[in-house]
Length: 351
Image (cartoon, rainbow, N blue to C red; front, side, top):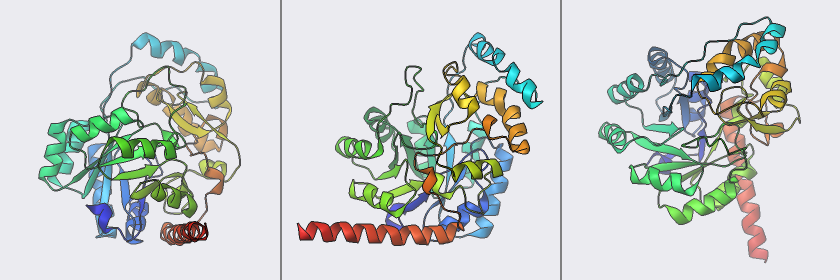
């Protein structure tokens, strides 16, 4: 497997929605990790272009992440929430978008990745069917699935997944849960607990994700049974990332994070701001409909440098992020991981 061949056990999280770029993907792979390219929110044509750009920058292995389509939400549910956003839109001088359900180009993106394979295809928001997994295996791609609890892991392995991305509740951005339960307010399973639970439930490699921004965090994940760590927030301040200026400033702050559906209609962790605080309690499960409703508002806020209307996705340890080139950051994280594991082994020997 690719994970057995990585010089550094670091995987770049996909970072859909702007931060993902071919330069960032390639830089992480060139430094010895595994760079992922986010397919989410791109048209199939744009994904093809980004794949070509990434392949021009590196010959090392890369991965692509796909969103598994969900189900549409009742229009009246979306309309009730949208009506409460009119004041926000007027204040920002922006129009709200039209709510719509779509599959994020699922069939066309799968066709692209079977016609032009990559070493790894990962999935978020659900379990691909066994038929989809077999199609990707047939062209030589490994299949990874993001899971947040034991039952999801068992389902993914039954469908043929080669590895699982174990996403702890500390993770920034959207929860990778197969189903966004309206009763879930973000009290998910923490990463260390999740790794232990999954290790007892399935027998495939685990990639740890959630709140990891230092080598000490990577070391803890490896000690708990992961074979690699997936980091997203840690790379958001790298110059190669497409992270907006307002988002970069927020990442360097000590403002805490919270879970919310206010921006997209799907549970996600971001840095607290006025929009999150004001609208989280009212936001229903309605993805991607609400994502499309708030997209123009968020775009206007980013252009204006207004942090109170932007989805500032970040993991719980975002204040520890560093502003370094991605390759340099991979090297530093590897050194920190080695130092942490060496120190832990020394303490054990002393005991």
